[in-house]
Image (tube, rainbow, N blue to C red):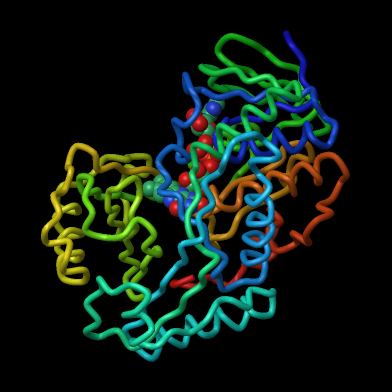
Length: 387
Ligand SMILES: Cc1cc2nc3c(=O)[nH]c(=O)nc-3n(C[C@H](O)[C@H](O)[C@H](O)COP(=O)(O)OP(=O)(O)OC[C@H]3O[C@@H](n4cnc5c(N)ncnc54)[C@H](O)[C@@H]3O)c2cc1C
């Protein structure tokens, strides 16, 4: 039997961030346990690397602004460049209703200090991204400080910096049991090769957070949702600094990464197989047809079918993160359910959870809106289809 003050289950960007921030606060007796043989096997390694602060709720804007501040000093803090590149996020509306949703989001964004988020006219959109076919586009939204990050560099940075502070990392360590004592606290974490006596546990298991919480008898409403990505072969059809461009109506979006154009369009996962992360060839055909219609220059691109990939979002019922101690288990801490925004928010959420564990409450931001108990209490955050 070994011991740790805090065991972090999951060595993706969330687990690495909270481990780093715990160590930075002075709690260095931390172990990261991950069932994969090496870092990046979960959603963090599948993410495209978008960063935005254009959200529709105050808490999400605040998380993004805190994360942006931390991304700007990430290299100084960890020694690794997180690749924050403010190329902008451009949203396109095809109806007055869609434009109204973008406007309502902007009221929240401006109230939180994101003054550079603006409405853009069709003429301005054509100037920002000349590759778009403008038929049917009635207006949009643009924020120049939104843009891109490098998920695996961020993971690498937090793992390296936490290791320097003494955090242990164990790969190939699947957690298969969480034992609670009579008071309800988790006292032991069991892996295939070890039993670890613990003071606290962090569930940072991404899309698998529900099954991990269940090991302690805790019900956590986080469900996986497949997201697929089609990629072209390397080409110069679109500029490397093109903003992330999103059709608000159906969520189709595209960006350029590493010389390739990435095409995304959200669809439901495979019925009855929530953890299936295979690529559906018919989906690739459909998303390519959308790209040809909306960005005509892409008719000259070649799709690299073997390089297309899929991964799993970790959805919560209101598409907001779940942060803090589980209601039923006071030393099981949750950093889950970011619903597809987890890489960009990991710097903020990791710091905030470390504050909760170390100081009893988050000090940098009020995170009441993210409390695990909000679903049972009927305090869900407003869900916006677009933002
Ligand atoms: C296609 C796609 C595109 C995305 N694009 C973006 C984007 O542009 N911007 C953005 O911010 N976010 C994006 N996301 C979301 C983002 O990837 C996630 O929110 C984020 O990576 C979650 O990090 P995590 O550390 O919680 O999960 P993960 O990276 O999945 O890490 C969880 C870890 O837990 C481990 N684990 C699971 N069960 C156990 C167990 N029982 N014992 C031990 N270890 C276990 C896994 O091996 C894994 O390494 C995208 C996601 C996908 C799928």
